[in-house]
Length: 139
Image (tube, rainbow, N blue to C red; front, side, top):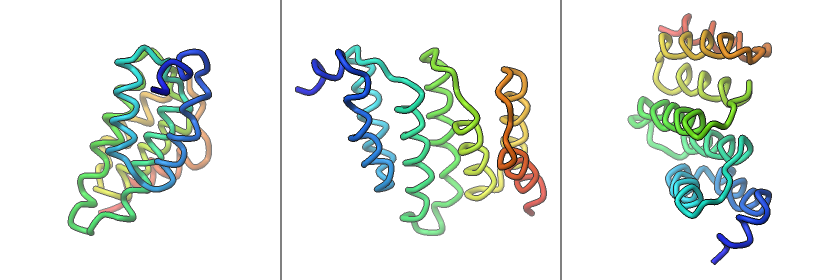
């Protein structure tokens, strides 16, 4: 029902996606983003960022044994974002690196993301460097 108004204004879905992301509803956020794409609604960097934020927030609600799986949905969101021709920004890359570092000790993936970030001329910020270093230094 909201698709029609969302097609006219890409800002329309932003409050919904932000609310879902703040609640840590990563799966629901992913479903909304997928439905938006199917319905021809423009999905922009803010929308994808909400998906990445939802994955990060969801980590707090998961049992500790599931921490190791948190980086996978974040990488999937980043891949879907890039596949949809939306330019990932430093926040998207950094959030994904943080998930690799904190959730699962995926240091190689975090460093790969850092390299990819620089390769597409996205300027890393201080937290980007910190996330890459922390992932590498975490046993």
